[in-house]
Structure formats: structure tokens, C-alpha cells
Length: 358
Image (cartoon, rainbow, N blue to C red; front, side, top):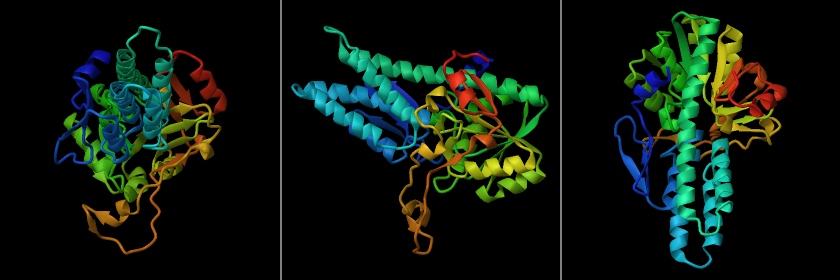
């Protein structure tokens, strides 16, 4: 399965090449495939903040490479570069507030910086660490895809109909994706009859990115409005909702793309199983519950405007980017460390202290 998944990799959103970070600009897809070339840390901060790169794993990887660029810039400045590098850490940390992977990657890069030995090349050390973060996410995606398929087969092995929300694919990660990695693996195993993808307002990640990724993989895709989800669960024989996550609290509550919570409620009502696929780097044991997760809210213009044109009445706007799905609405969380069914604090803690046990 691993080799087949690697052979099926068709979409890549992040490249580290010749000392520069290359990001496929997600704001322009699918109409235009344009690569941003970041050679300075400020460009990486802007790319994350402005949604050119998005998805928790991809944000974390980009931030790691951003710190390599920062180190190179600061070393060239000479005396006092350590304080400037601290400011770069803060700028990257503040670029998006919800993605747990961002803070995990920054913490790992900081730890490597602090372990630099006398005479060791600090820039080369951080470069190697960022590459290792990227590669570990790619491997985690492959492992999660295999675990997810085994779980789907165990519950119902024939062709099934799936629903996914947002974009948790290759564009949002360093590999084949989290939720979409599982769906890609299921497709290779002949287990996918159809995947329903909702549009995911207001940035349209579902219609622009997820539908594009899956169609490129030859998966049968049907696009629907966000508000059609419950009706389709009732009428189309959907068996699984499969989503990614930005952050998972210690008790199993999941912060994910806005609209995930209502999908979980509808899924429970209709007897549809609900799967969250996320690397263990998305789990923050310092957060007791979903109430402790900082949820980003973005500018009103994202709802009021379409393609730069005002289409809505001039009223007050609520534009939360993420919501929290309580653990008791989740059937299973799939990580590279293994499967957590009916997640709770004890199961999360047990899985996080073990190595990739199924």
C-alpha cells in the first residue's frame, strides 16, 4: 500500500529548493498554478497569514523553513542576531493562532537551535531539522492512510460513499494529506463509490482545492453546498464523514474547519460514522478541552465580498474560521501513532505516550 500511495502522489504544495521555500499559492487554485518563492522570513509570515499556504501541517512545515530563512538573514546581520531571531519566532507564531502544528514545529526548531554545539553550523542544523519535519509529516500521512483504510474495511468492506469538508489533502500537508490521504488509499483499494465535497465557505477550500485534488486522482466527486450536507446524509447512503483537524485537545475535542461541528451533529443523527484524521503533532495535551483552544476569526470582507466585489448587505459579520467538535460526537481519531476509537482524555494520553501501536 505504501508504494502505491507514493506512486499516486500527484499534488505537491511545498518545495524546499536552493535555499528558498516554494509554495503553491492556494488562493489562485484551481484556475492558476502559481508558485510563490520565499527567500525571507517576512514572506513566509505573509504567506501563512494571507492564506497562500493553509492547513495545519503545511503551516507548521512552512514555519520551520521560515526559521531557516530567518537564521540566514540574522546571521548576515552580525552582532545581536539572537534577539532578531526571537522576533522572527514570534512573528511566525502569531501568523495563525489555531494550528497546533505551527507551535509544535516552532518548538522543535527552537529546541534544535538551543542544542547547537560549539563549532557546529547552526544554519545547516536548522535546515536539516526543517527537512526532517517535512519528511516526518509525509511519512505520518502514509501511515494514517493505511490505518484509515483498515478501519473502513473492518466496519464495511464494500464500496462506500464518503463526505469530506474543507481541505485536508496534499495542499494542506507535506504528503498525500490526512483526511484525503485516507480517501486516496480507499480509492486504491476499490472502496470508494463516491465522495461528496461541500464548498466550504467563505474561502471555498472544498470546491476549489479538495474537489480539484480528488478529481486529479480519478476519484468520483460530487460538489454540494455547505447547507446540503444533512439532506445528502439522509438520501445518498453516506457511510463516513472524514475530516482533518487544526488542533485536538487532551480530552479529544477537535478544532477543525468551521462547519465541522454541525456535520458531526448531522452524522450522529443519521448514523454516519465520523472520522478525524490528524498527525499526533495536532494534539496539544496542554489544552484540557476544546474550550481552551484559541479559535481564529478573520476579516468581515471575506464574507461580504466575492472576488473583490461587495455582494452582501452592510451588516455586522461573524467570520469564525474554526469550530470545536466535542469528542463525544467523534467515532474515531486516526493518527500515525494508531487509532483512537470513541476518544477521551485517557485514550488520548495513552496513545500519545506510545509509539505507532495499532
